[in-house]
Length: 145
Image (cartoon, rainbow, N blue to C red; front, top):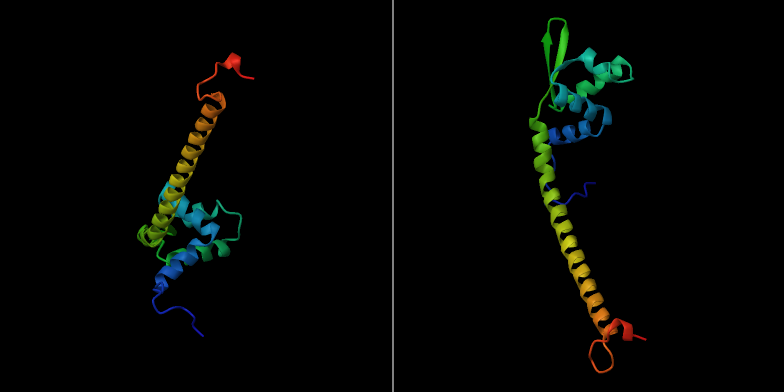
């Protein structure tokens, strides 16, 4: 039974595969390496991970099927390259949530600033009241009981 509201936009299969690919820390690290160091061979990438080659190849397959990396042959080597377009789609998907949290945090900051200002004003008023004598004039510090 599908309980998804009809007004909710379902992610495309591509979006689902991108998010599934990004769920793995190994795959996120592969993307980071490709972003920072540029295209690399399977051997160069695999050498940075403590796992069997078939397991690492499976991670590359998931990234390739999600469109996050591309593969090209260079003689006997396969070079992998980061494909940024699906990541731009993720950013676009996350943008409304970023705006939501930015607005919420801004509101909280204003609330805290107002509370801090109110507390400072109350403290200043309390200090002024403590230094005034019964006639409403200020007492000299040495005259305070």
